[in-house]
Image (cartoon, rainbow, N blue to C red; front, top):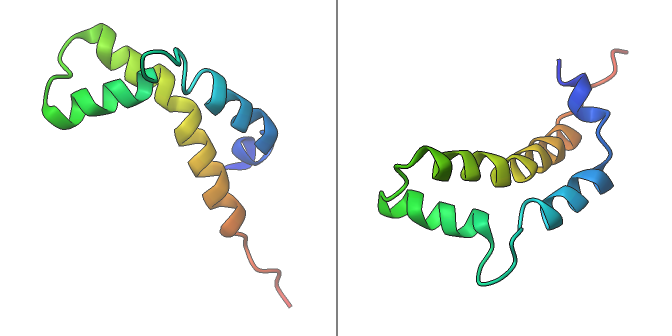
Length: 77
């Protein structure tokens, strides 16, 4: 079912998280700023929601990929 996710190399997801997921680095990572806005209820503008989706996507894919590594079907005997 998640065969497409298992074909993405972990190294590529890590690079995506460290670049797109954290960019811009100064004054604080965009994803962190948007998560703070979400937690405080200030995430209203469409551009902010798009930013959260864009900068959060690599992190969600990495998390899903790591979960899929731990959930392997057992071979039938």
